[in-house]
Image (spheres, rainbow over the protein chains, first blue to last red):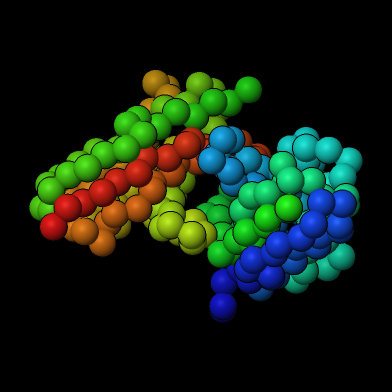
Length: 115
Length: 109
C-alpha cells in the first residue's frame, strides 16, 4: 500500500477563498483522522471518522471548517472562507479501527498558507 | 481534559550516547500510547505502540515503557546516531488521541 495520500502537498491561497484538502486513507482502514499542526498549538485533532461516519468533530475550530467522508477511500477537509490564521500543516491519518485504537499512520501533510 | 507533556523540549547529544525521552499524561484512562518521529517538513512516522495492558515495546534500538498508573512513558534510544535527529512525539489515545509538543533531538557526529 502507498500509505495515506494527501493532496495537495502545498497550497497558497488568498484570504476569503475556499480551500479543499484531500485524503486517501490506507485501504482497509476504518478510521480516519484530520489534524492541524502549528508552532503555537502543536498537533490538534480536528475531527475523526469511523466507518465513514463522523464520531467527534469537537476539535473543528469554527463553522468555516467542514469535513466529509463520502466513502471508505476518500475524505475532504474544507475551509470556507479561509483566513490567514488558518495557515498550518494539515495531516490526515488512518488506522485499522478506532475502537481497538490500533496504530495510526499519517500522510505527508498539506502545508496551507493563507495570505 | 487530557494533557500530555514531553520533557525535555530539546536535547542535543553526541553520537553513540544512550538517551531517554519522557512523556507524561494527566488522565490514566487510556487505550494506548504511541510514539512518533517527525522529520522537518514531513509527516509523522509511527515508532512504537503500547496498549494500556502492556508495560513496554521494543523495536531495534528503541524501547518504550508505559506506567499507566503514574501517567508516564519513556522512549529509550540506544547507541544514538545522527540519523536519529528528529522530533519525537508521544500521543495518548482514549477514543481520540492527544499529542505532546514533542522533543527535538539532535545527535551530533
